Length: 337
Image (cartoon, rainbow, N blue to C red; front, side, top):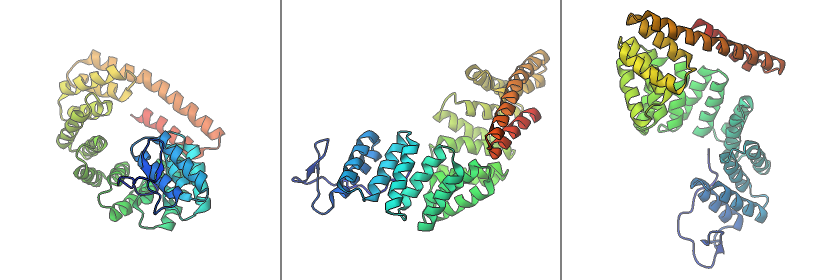
């Protein structure tokens, strides 16, 4: 999420307006609304969202036409999970200044959180109209496209974002995810490794890099990635599953079983883990254990298939056809597993 204004980190001079924390705001060179908004931005960046909202409200009370205060308040509301309120605040800002790019991107974020992805794309397009070189708008648009299954377009948007901002961590990760969905796994690995050069402790990048390597048939490299991820997040279910899968493909069935057993202790309904365990037991000659694990997965799958089909019927009734298709596809994916 983008904050509207920069921060003033210099000490406030005496004789200015006193804020709620006892800090004096220097109003000598600014309009009061600008100073109050700047304080709201500072508090937002420190995670003090309730307090920041009070400062944005104070700015608005001073100057109701000061658009950045409305956008800044929207950002803080969104951070508190009040996404509809964020949209309304940003709409007010945009009514005052249709070219306030941060307000368009903040609104796009809130729309995405509410799964209103087509509207999110429209908001991003408006931000891009205002500033075609604004990388966060391209990345946000890409994310929305990906949520709609339009992965080629997501990758293209992320390409633009990283060309504009080569150290844009989120855009590299989103690009990698889209490329994985397109089964362009080598390119995905490159994206995740770019992200890790920027921030070496980025857990999601380590996990997704490992997954892309597995899907590219490079299990040894994948295990190294997932081991590093495991150092950052021990007993993480995604790490346990994908590392177990990689180990099973390397023929290390006992090691794979150890990780999968830890996983199903956390999540007994992880059907794919039971399938991998079934395969490992089979390869070790433990036929009874293999059948037992398979039957557990089968029982879980029956319920998941029923749930997917029921959800798809409800979505069709609501006219949400794209979501219904995704739900039915999920059911077919379970059957084909």
